[in-house]
Image (cartoon, rainbow, N blue to C red):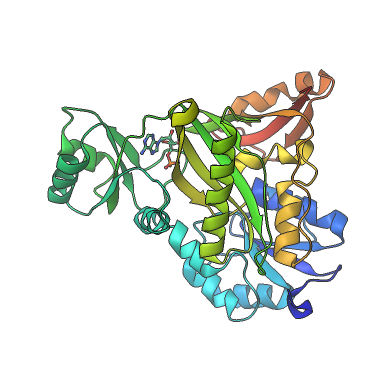
Length: 362
Ligand code: AMP
């Protein structure tokens, strides 16, 4: 990597988005002598508390974006729904990592699935759905059960509906607001896992071990490492991440969400989706790995050497959703529990308020 593209201590990282992921990136930048400047429209952004500067403005406020670009040395983001126009506007003035191509591909499920399938990597069978007629045709080909998803702005199970044998196609299409959609065959998975990896502009790559993820009400509840996958499954998952990272020319940390299908020698790894950012399933690395995913992201976008990804034992990370964060005192009383609270004022149902991590003997 050329020295021109390498940040120096004292440089400022601009982060689009002010939630807990931006907060944890900013916290990881500080011990490396880097500053963080957060750009987010919400006045009560948890990341503002820990950054050396912040801009509270809309993502289409060109004047505010120009001032932000002039004040930072690199721009990154904590969520994949950053408007591409915002990222492109900034990219004319300052390096944006990951780039706008990764953003554009991962914002649209059909583009993303086609991209992954085009690399020869397994996905659920899928079809484009813009009309009820297309949905009926897709159901005839793919069969049921199937999952109908909006192509844009879906997260934590929002904008999707399961279609069972005998269900009414029109009702399913109405349930997702008749938005442009993708129909996916239902993958009969045994487990959901993810791989979190980092790539630098020159192609240097480092993946964490595969993480097993348990969801409740479509929200990540618990991640454990190591995951219950075969050694072949482990290396297949890491290889998938490497190929996706290379094909995107990716810079920074990203996650690939995967389904594990079949047991033993029949085990197969199927890609669900790519997150072009640090990921909730990588929070265990804060306390449980040699280098946290947040530090790794900072290193990657700064053009610095990537850190070791080895874990420090069996690790279990549990999210604190809504009122669960009220148990903070009891968690702190547990020897060895590492507590992370995100500084959010209001514990709304379904809101990620914090997480805690335990490191267990092997
Ligand atoms: P997503 O928003 O694509 O991450 O989907 C949210 C959750 O829905 C996943 O974590 C899975 O539990 C489930 N899901 C999504 N797509 C499929 C599929 N094609 N087959 C089976 N389960 C799925």
